Image (cartoon, rainbow, N blue to C red):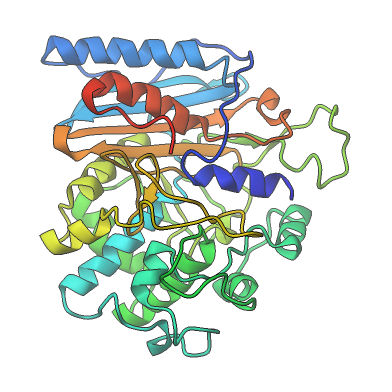
Length: 415
C-alpha cells in the first residue's frame, strides 16, 4: 500500500508510531493574534509550558509550522503560531487550513439534532433514503455514524489510490466514492465490529440531504456553524482555501511517481482537491480559534439533548471490537482509543484528529475541566523519509500539552 494509506491511517488515534528525528526552526512566528493575558498564574504557567513544548518538539518531529490554542472555560490561555507557512512567510494564528474529520463530528451532531427533533431515528435503515446502495436494507443510520456498518473504506482501494495519485487535483463525486466501498461484500455483519471507513460518511451525507431536504453545507451551517459562531469555517466545492492560507507540503507521491527512496521530493499540496475526503458539503476549511470553540461544544454536548449527547460519547465499543484479517482499519478498542458517534474517545477526552495532504490537526476537549486544545501542523521534507509513514504529529503534541493542562486526567499515551 502507498503513502496515501499511510497518511490516512493517521486518522485512527494511536495506530501509528512517533517519529523522533531532527529538523526545522523552533522560533515562534510573528502573529497578528497574540497570547491574551491570563487572569490566573496557573494559566500563565500553562501558556509558558505550551510554548516550551512546541519549540522543543518542532525539530524532532520535522514540523514546518504549528498553530496551537488552549482555552479553559472558554477563555484563551494561549493562541500562537510557530514556524513558516511557506519559505519566508511566517505562520499566523488567523490562517485557514483543512479540518478534515472535524467535520465528521459536525455531521454526527447534525444527525443527532434531527433525532432530537424526531425527524429520524438512529435505528432507521439507510434504504429509506438510498435504496439503490448495496446492503442499505441491513445498515442503519446509527451504524453509519459509528462506523460499524461493515462497509469497506474506499481509500485503501488500489484503483482509487492509483487514480488519486495520478491526478490529486481531480474532483470526485460522492457517487464515485461510495461505489468503491459498497461494491464489495461487507467486512462483517452490521453492528458486530468496527472499521474506519470514509464510505460511511459519504453515504451519511447523501442521506442527510434527503432527510433534511437541503444541501449538506446548508444543514451544517444552520445546525453547527451559525449557532457556534464559527465564522472562520466554511465548505467549498473547489480546492479553494480562504486567505490567509496555511500552506501544506507532502512527499507522499514519491513512490507513486516512481522516484527512488533517496530522492529529495516534496510538493505544495495545499490546493490538492479534497473532494475525496468526505461527503459533499462537509469538505471544510477552518481556523485554530474555531477548532477550540467547536471542541468545547461537541465535548460538552451544548447542541444536543442529554440523551443524544450521552449516545455520542458512549464508550460501549471498548473491549467489543476485533481485528479482521485483510482489514487494515479494523481495530480493538480500549481506554486509549474508542469511537463514539462521530468522535474519538480517549480516556475522558473527546476529540477528532484529521490528517491528509500534508495537514495534520487535533481538536480535543476535557469536559470535566472545561479545557479545549487545538493543534494544527504542517511538515518539512524529512518527515516523509520514513517508509513507515508519517504519524499525526499534531496528535502527539496534543498528548504532551494535555498532560500539562490536566495532569490528573492526561490523554492516554496508548490504546
